[in-house]
Image 1 (spheres, rainbow, N blue to C red):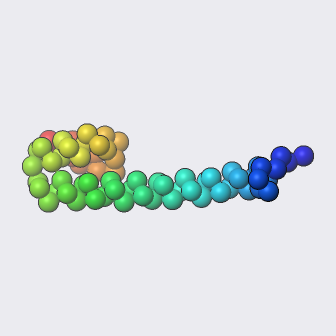
Image 2: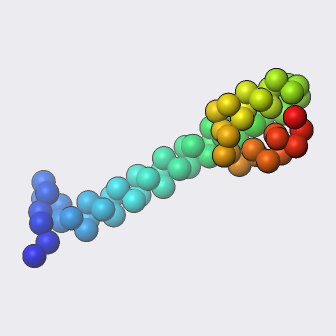
Length: 68
């Protein structure tokens, strides 16, 4: 038997959470790209260090490390 939670089955609840998790991942990627763009526009070692402070495992972390 599937447990009901506020008129949603457990499976429906998990599916809703998965959708929201993907949404939050998209937001995180957006902010990562914004931070990277800011670092590139400044183009200083300090700006790349600041990017890494926030996004140590970010999309562009290897690039930032190589520049520093």
